[in-house]
Length: 227
Length: 227
DNA sequence: CTAAAAAGGTGTAATTAATACACTAATAAT
DNA sequence: ATTATTAGTGTATTAATTACACCTTTTTAG
Image (tube, rainbow over all chains, first blue to last red):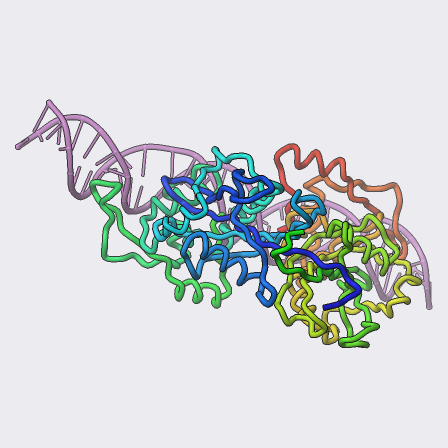
């Protein structure tokens, strides 16, 4: 500890994205303590004494969702002196991409967690709306150049569903043929010998993201790119 | 202050980019205190009690360079528990783009500051090399989609010099005609009635970046893009 | 049993953007 | 007057992106 220097509470806040009902969703909790008790908020918590910040984010997320090994990326650090009326807290925001089908709803209940679509976001405490805003912009950019979208889908998915995901993230319609042409031409998916018959009478092929193929793409000097 | 929570020293480290001699340069300081006294390091300092983190970065940068109103962008927060052997410090890294011609060399001397090219970087303390690495990647990406490059040039510059800057940032040669075509087609530069005769017998037109034109470009729904 | 409904799946032509490329112009120094 | 040096300019080729429409498969309802 450098004694001549000031000392701050450091927290982590998690922007938790999910994909359900063909919409991008956000998992929010109701604060259980003052200030702003009962307001909607991002899931957060304090960093521990000897804890790495990434680990703190993962711990807090596991607490909320019951999930480990989730895609988690540091977003930005918020440090306005008066951002939290309860005292000065410097907060490192992370965003997470989770598969809603894996969610442990038990865990969520403890925190009165609820999914919200982006069209329906409630007012959030402090600067959390700003955090969400930055997170969605980051996700949009990132999803174009890295295969992060798959983190939001179940292991097996149809191309239509993948397209709906990109449409939800970017909030615009895509052409079916061009979309398929592009994603298939990169050769990062494996088609399974299995069809999904839930959303279609005819049945649609199921695919999974193939990390090995992706690694080969990259080491060949190419990029993942979904413009 | 949330008393149940831990408390951390929070610092800021600045990755300071300059452009001189047709090369991208980095301003480093020699640490004047332990641990790692006399090692090369990024310029850093602690955040003050009621100080906004951006302001802390600006203060530290002004201390080093004598410059205000410098382009400064938060990069990433580093919080490994043992990243600083002198004690746990969470550091918010910023990168700055400065015009080397405006630099107050007096200020720099106080910190034994020196410019280094990227081919010649010394070993840096702690995780500072990682910070630099992230900063250059961010600058590369950012310079393609926002007009941040101009922050590294004097007010007035020739197109050749602007091209050299992009070449230095991206570390690859660009085609002169294609480069000019592109930058001029966006109409964000104003050509002055003035020529630079330092680097050429014939003289080259001087230009300046025109914020108004840029704003018009953006509000017209277009983007700055130097692919 | 056949018609209708609903999603799956496919290819090509037109347009636009990116790239490659080489000479003349102006001026200062010799 | 010649040479050396950087400035400045346009076009043709190639590659990438976009726009666009029909047939297939299967279930359900009449």
